[in-house]
Length: 379
Image (cartoon, helix red, strand yellow):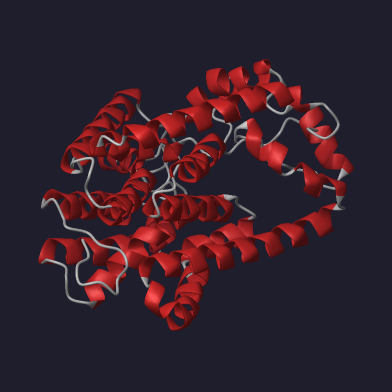
């Protein structure tokens, strides 16, 4: 539709006020009509910002099956590039032996497999995130700002990166981020028209903010809804949703306060804190399906290294051990949903709570962080 200059209609049904995340496209819409021409009779709605659709236009010149294969190949390349950059950050002196197991670990990470199976965009976001972190670690201000801006314009949740930058009082990086973000938004308006972006923020985003009450939506807000209603089969309560948003805001503010440091603090510590905030963003986002936890992979790689070297206290280690299996699920979340047992549902939703506890515990002691792992200190 973007390629055919019909982009103004990609949000037609998604902007009708109902949550578009799990809605099938109306057969009478132009969106569904184009899907049928491609041989897809039932299709979900497009709920990402316009930039992602613009970026995927080159794939629209291919047949549907070829485009799927191309996207899978691109995702494999994204994983390869992301793990190479991450290995260079974590262990630059031993990249050759450290990179292969890191690649396998990220590839077999359950959220990564979900992305590959479902065709999700989160692996591209992982590459942009890791590239931004690497540029930030190397004090390359504008390239880092551009990476963070692109990932924010594709999926709004990474905007959380502003909080630690404020805590660092890194005004130079913040200015670069704002300039890059403004440039991207202007570019989107130039390509697609100002109305499409306004339609997205005025209609699509508000309709998704309540969140979906499902054990598969792994975030703090859903955990509160299930804990209060004792089931995941009822619509979200507005009062609990509001309380969840306020509590999430309080967690973000507290984490930001814990992250404060002088402007001259080393970039290794700051980069590690940025990783933790991306992990925190996964746990607090209104929409946090398992595949979105791919963005927690860099922080987990560092934290597993810290645990391996015995540099974790009991609270951090227990939180890490709870967070990983509960977020991955291993079938437990689906089983809890099928049984409808309130205690099992509560246990299934402890994953994001453990992730929040892990992040705050790591930030609480004003950690002295250092990348790479080859060095003496880490968090």
